[in-house]
Length: 401
Image 1 (tube, rainbow, N blue to C red):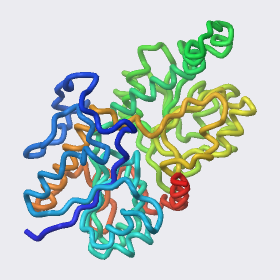
Image 2 (image 1 turned 30 degrees about the vertical axis):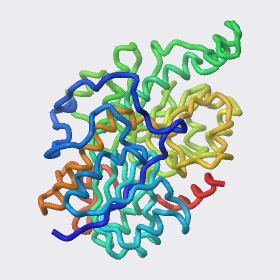
Image 3 (image 1 turned 120 degrees about the horizontal axis):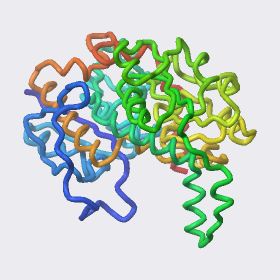
């Protein structure tokens, strides 16, 4: 087996240093995802589930495994701009690993510099930070750890829907400031009971959101290019719409749970947001480029939207002057919904499973494949379309200034 160079791009350690203790001891033990797919099944792991794996010092628990097989591992958080560590190390890398939360954008220009690159792994789900067309053209395999953090994201969606509707964040801030301003808190606070809530995308995350919202006695809607089975529609009492444009006028809350590709890029522009009910809430934990940055900010300022929340931006990290940091009535976080410690244990194990298969010349799980053999494959054939959604990612370099 030849030595391979693996470049892994992870987010920075906590500002106070890598943790020496954690809030909880361990994680619940799960064996299957909803629907029966097994969790990642590597031969072994070299980490304790429940620790911080997604930052630089965590190294996804991969160093011992790789170095024992004489491979080399470079781990960095410096990923943007021509002088970044990632750009320099990419030149002779065979494998690149990146997380959606701190994406190493693999643009066509970077593919052209990476003559030895054969495998791009997303430690998580969502491989739109890779120019999939360029990967197909160069026969680079792209894989992600399907389902590893779908439930994590769906929990975040429900959390922020309730937070927006109940005006939680401003209410919390009154407490921090020493106030007891009940009228200020409740002047924008509503129950979601009886509301019409729709998801754009009803894959693993979208369906999990619908299942978690059903007990709130809301009326559910969805749009997706793949319609759910009749039995699932009846079980959830959910109404299907052919397009997002047909669905959004009836919804009090719209949550976006669709992959980013050329067909969904800029889907929620000025025109789409204008079709929504005045005072609706928009939640986006999918990808930042699905929503038009400036249209969202204007809609919050005008009152067309009552709130916007989520954790996805473009580019990532977002520049310090990104308008979503300062617009009113938002509930934005950094991209964290799929990077809970619970999710990290799954996507680190899944990354190792993919690497074990790759180095042993064994097939990677079909559901993990996005691009293989020069074409969309596995989960990629179901979720993506050919093309590139990385344009404009170079703006992320401004975050460092």
